[in-house]
Length: 57
Image (cartoon, rainbow, N blue to C red; front, top):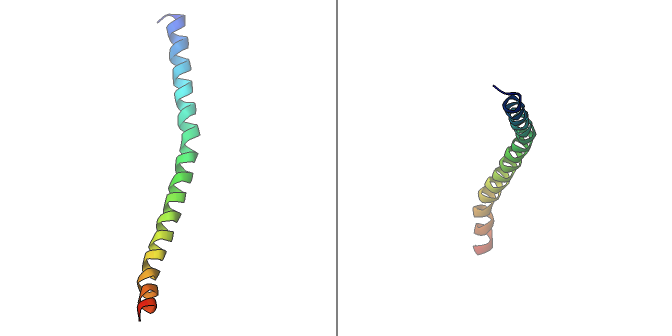
């Protein structure tokens, strides 16, 4: 393996590992936000039928 090939391989590997390390916390934050939104939507849906019933009675 030539020095140039070894350098390119090492650089690519380093950039790949850096990209994964950078993306992982963002994906975790996104999952937490989606969970909160899903919970909020579930709370709205569970509240809505009782609320609509009081409006029509």
